[in-house]
Image (cartoon, protein in one colour):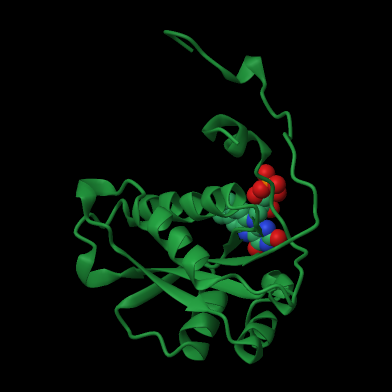
Amino acid sequence: MDAIENIMKRRSVRKFNKNQLVPESVVEQILRAAMNAPSANNKQPWDFLVIDDRTILDQIPNIMPNAAMCNEAPLAIVICLEQSRDKSPDYWQQDLAAATENILLAVHALGLGAVWVGAYPNQQKMAGLRKTFNLPEEVTPFSLIPIGATSVNQDDAKRFKSERVHRNKW
Ligand SMILES: Cc1cc2nc3c(=O)[nH]c(=O)nc-3n(C[C@H](O)[C@H](O)[C@H](O)COP(=O)(O)O)c2cc1C
């Protein structure tokens, strides 16, 4: 699959084959893609919490009902800000969003499925993640991505709208 096809055919996946574990080598490829994201001043302010313990995955929907699909996913990654590395305070959300999207695209390219589950700026969800995972004070959870093998078909959503494109002036 070429890069453009990968972008066009990536779709959110919320149903996973629970018992098909993601090999460690694939987890590392996904994390390498995440850390290859662009960031303001190249500060790379992120940390990644990898969750592959079935008992812990099953607890996540209790703290984040919007992450109910963790009941089925064999893997989830929480993308976090580590504040001491954040020297561009107005840009860290964009940095972490870029890392999150890189994960989604890498997962799709590797033949798996994933969905971006938002945490920041919802204080309740962030507090739940902070407590469950013993996140230190200087760490801010941003997003959570359940990942796994899937039989859900992913295809082009055909969202292009030429009227949304403005050229040279509005
Ligand atoms: C910031 C953000 C937060 C999101 N939060 C959730 C969520 O809590 N639960 C969920 O099922 N999907 C969530 N999504 C996924 C969107 O619903 C999905 O990307 C959108 O419907 C478009 O579908 P697609 O990803 O298949 O193109 C989120 C996406 C973004 C960018």
